[in-house]
Image (cartoon, helix red, strand yellow):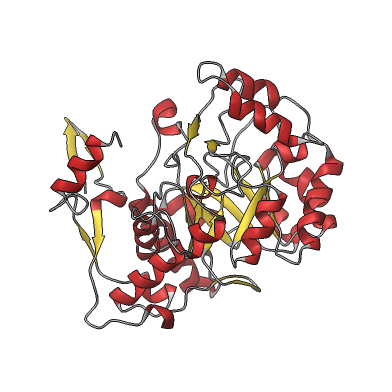
Length: 386
């Protein structure tokens, strides 16, 4: 199957958020009566939304506030919070940096070694607030930081890189044995990122509890431009969800699929769930929160790379409090606030009482869905310079 793109060469048709729409159900449900809870092992969260492990989004204070509002925030153990005693001054340098030199400044700042003492301190500070603690590291550092995090009382550990596979070949470092790592941690382990059925299924077989889906869709990520890789999020999520269902039928263990990145507002979040996601991971939407450490700026995790930066600093502005972005009330009409309210209303309109029911609602290919009948909105947006 596929479309011919040249003699002897086919390509598969794939779909992103702008290519599809959800069809209202034959009956509807009061938004207050739908269940949006998300579960990973024995941890239950009121909302299926995770804040990305990015330095412009999550610090200790943000993680605590996110937890109190019913969600989960992931702290990057290889970021500024564990490199500096006073990360605020270095965050300010990034915010103030001219566009022409910001990548060089990021590279300089991130060269600072990680302080293991700060790893434990950050986890303990979040833990003291009475919320669930989640942290992340790259695969090469997972064993080192995993043990420190475990001793400090972390609840969920995330292993994340641009593309993560079970089979990784390297002559530079010892590759991570995911199966062994999951047994050692004795807590939920989330791994990413993946975009295919085969790679997702192989990763699920190692004993993980959830998988992150998405390569390059984030607003601050340039992986698709720099490396030319990636799969649009609707197709990537649907393929991973198929792997999840295959694995569940075979083993009885349910592995959550988390759509990671590319969602601009409530509508995209709803489509991510409808395409098979159990939860979503979001960065830029939360970088707009007053509580975010980036002060209205956002940058990708690979931006400070010395050899090949695959991210950029973007200005998203400060649009409201974290509570307004998650739960409302909304002060903007673009779907950037009250994300949970948008999900509840969409589920109600589709007749889905739970996340699992939302995953099987009818979806159509509709590339004109965002522009049909919106002539005046588009004209006004152009006139306002948006």
